[in-house]
Length: 130
Image (cartoon, rainbow, N blue to C red):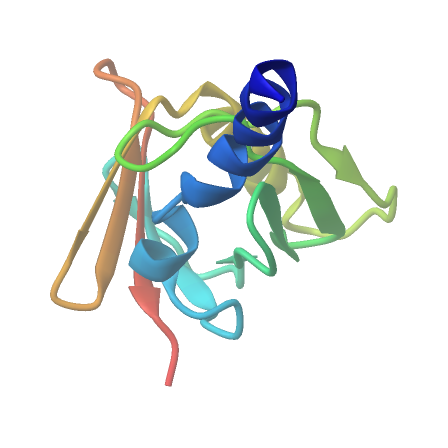
């Protein structure tokens, strides 16, 4: 009986722990619109969403992308980001965006703004889209 209780607690305990990350970034339907990339205003459309716990997705200037998110707020870390492979005039901005997203290590959310940074030069600033 004692062994059963130990095994049962090992099964239930992880379910009691919760990742508050999705709540911080929105309810899964929140779309974050990129406004600034590495200190420069962005005119190309790029978005970031957190469709479910442990996932990111969005639209870079040219392509759709998605990938795993492997850290809990306020840490930010993605696994490999997969993207479609269409060309467009904003491909250089897209490359810079996806590289900065991949290099981001911390996140802050304040007053409808999401900032991702890595402590160095790479910084992405998003606003919650209406």
